Length: 129
Image 1 (cartoon, helix red, strand yellow):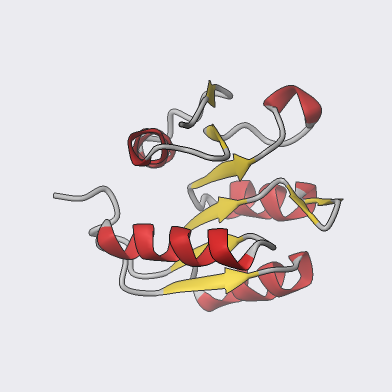
Image 2 (cartoon, helix red, strand yellow):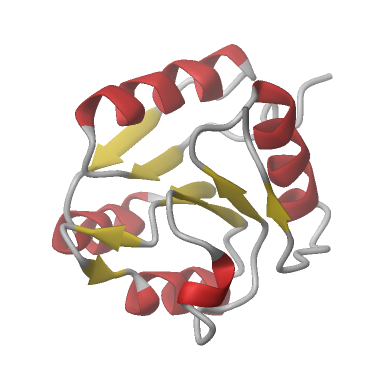
């Protein structure tokens, strides 16, 4: 059974349309039937009110850090991962969550998603490829 088979609503916070659509397809393939794409932080924060059960965050949208959004996800208990071209050390104050570097192999994304759902969110960098 897929990690996301119990999740009906995911959020992808990504300003690159191609990457956002690829992530949406990946989450759908894992069993998540509804994925909202938010290319800006204000849109992502609004989407949180729509019952999001899992999120994928790019740590900087057009150079704007996602600190507030990550804190809201932690407060609400919503599992999430970071998916970024940056390194974890570039954003040391972000709340702890699994971190996957772009580009990433499906196996690395799946491992991070599994870690987020297991509530064992170490700040580990998984190099994609």
